[in-house]
Length: 456
Image (cartoon, rainbow, N blue to C red):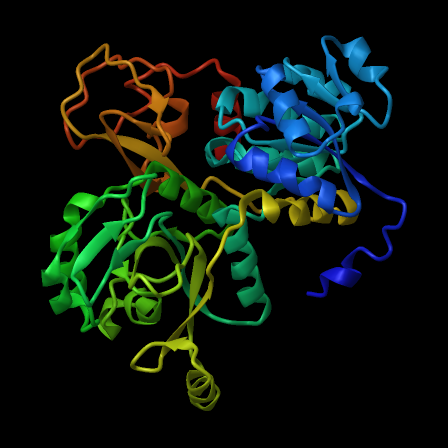
């Protein structure tokens, strides 16, 4: 795609952006990028911490005398057109003249309310809060279609990047048998010293694991089994991973390869030998699936950077022999290839999604359905009265391990991100899921939108 010409007929148009949950993490990267992008300007940010907003904006070079804190709807409506507004109450965002709402609070209650109302008022919505899309995505896409607005996931996060790669492959007529992503943090092993490091946090854990040498070179499923045995303590089912794949499933119709994903520890060069059917030496029991892997590499090798991949069938031997010679990742049997994007640049990429939506009207997926549901399974016996809380970097719930199920096989599963603040009405035994009978989550807007989405 020639991005330099994509918007050449949009002269005079500008996307006026409002961001909720804007001062840290993803939102911060977007705030830093917006001033560099033609056709786009920051109009408003919403946060409970207005002082922090002011500090972040001025630190990024926004002019202090052009920043205005607004306390009510009248102040928002009467603000100078060239001012950047700060509001504490997220509902005031809807009173502004923004064209694009970027939602990145991670709070399903806030996100569902403001997004549904924005779409009805003619404001396009760009969803960063994957927790909300996992339960409300189908109905928000439908609301957007009904009101001639755009609802869109955003480039810079894995689900949209993977969906773009998938759609590219489908456009080319490729048979895509699996799609997936890498976990956020690499498994790094030094063949010279035997030192292993798991790259999570400011002080990543490390230890000497010379035994990994036996499983450094891929020799089939036994290699994956050996790596897992040695690195088991560094592995877990990560809520954020499954949530992101939930989003991809709901748009593509692809289903989980396993309820907890397979999470093979693999090098990039091995992916076309791993995410293929068992009868061809891989790990898949069926095709048309979503999955996640843990990237294994040497210290001097490039990272996959939590990027995305598709596995396709090699249908013409002459073509793929040629491409193999060019260095592409093709399976040893020559039947499959891995195509991948080794990145997700967060808010640095997001302006592309906003401009595609605001200026070209591209984004809404009317075909989005609740194909899968992410639910929580008890890690241990949980007694009646246990309070469930979403917390931590990975937005997990203590006592629950996430699993991703096809909705048709789990009609009464309680969606993971609707459990925040819920209290168990019944005992839940280890290994059993939390169902809609075990909690009362009715009455909230996200729950209502989820139930409406199930009917589509």
